[in-house]
Image 1 (cartoon, rainbow, N blue to C red):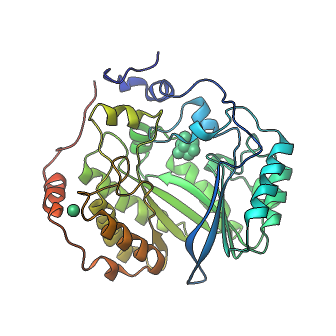
Image 2 (tube, helix red, strand yellow):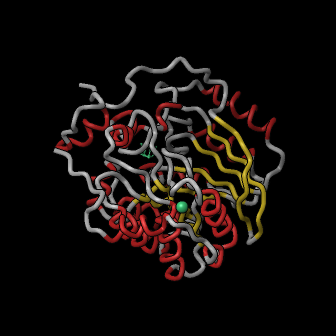
Length: 345
Ligand code: SF4
Ligand SMILES: [Zn+2]
């Protein structure tokens, strides 16, 4: 039964609840066009360089089709039915027409690049080979698909795999995020990558639902330190409110606020000294906007700029001159226990 926005949630069966917010029909979407392509800055071999980002349109994340994570609405852009091989190849040709030799290439699918039901194995290999000249080639996958066989088939020198661990707490993975896997699955996949000398980039989530701002900060810091033992880079993803998700439902009811940008800064400042040479980055989606990590509206641009500078340079002095009156409100939010926790019946 779909939830109405004025309805309280019954969280006893989180997998079913998350599913109740999803669109349930395959979309009539042009499957010969990628979802998006753009360029941005990233780092390769210690230098700031251009990065080409490609989001291929596929069937979508298997877990989102089954249930999904509480904050993720990527399935909204997916076809929800298999995309024909020839159309995946046409998407690829369109991407190559646009690609102009950027040194970093990131290929996403709103799911798992390595899932054979999203991209057949032979096409995975062809896509990766097409970007053989990039210095860094990053694809995302759930740990379920990071098998020795798959890695053996796709392995190439510039390849890096990104996995969304989100939290190093099994309890949070289960109760707050509804993740498809548990910590040991991530660790096993990380071990397989390490054995094959394929660098791992790990995403850590900041502020899944049903947590206070303080709990969210603590969990993100702990998760970064944990993930850094397995990763060459850790990326902090503050939750942004995406449609057709449980987080969106809570937000519309006034029961969820995306994290403060001050919290992102706090997490980066606290975690960086504990993780040595492992790169720590954050690119808050919709940062400074109501649906993304935000502060008071006055200081958001400056704080976002400092987060970007830190992500590119790893220099914590980027945060030194930041100030705004709203920092006191944020401190109250963090220091008053359970101030913004919403317990749902
Ligand atoms: S966060 Fe990843 S695993 Fe979860 S539903 Fe979205 S794409 Fe799937
Ligand atoms: Zn402010």
